[in-house]
Image 1: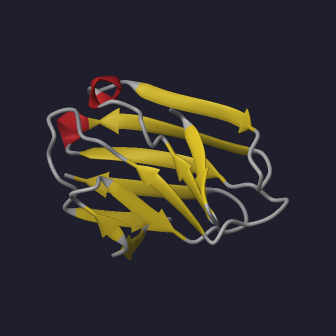
Image 2 (image 1 turned 180 degrees about the horizontal axis):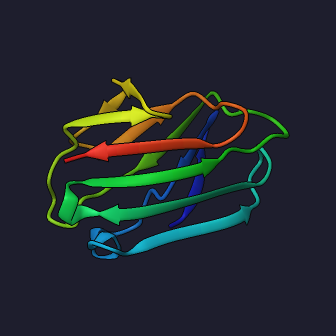
Length: 114
């Protein structure tokens, strides 16, 4: 529900329901084991302001090819735009509610606007 591996990709929050993403709610995972190493993340809902924010500490032992994070708006709205570490990002799927990012050293901040 909170983390899975699909081949060379690390998926975060693949089955977190939209009910957990109501405005002001957060989902957090700390030092979860994966084949790539330990990973932590926190998704915070700012749905009333039109966005969700994810802070990711990627695994450092072995980098996955991609980290895919599922960000579901509580009202089922599609993703309209994404930034990663403050820069525009285009690798997202509004239908699948996912954002695909390349792992980076240090923290990653993803903001999805709806």
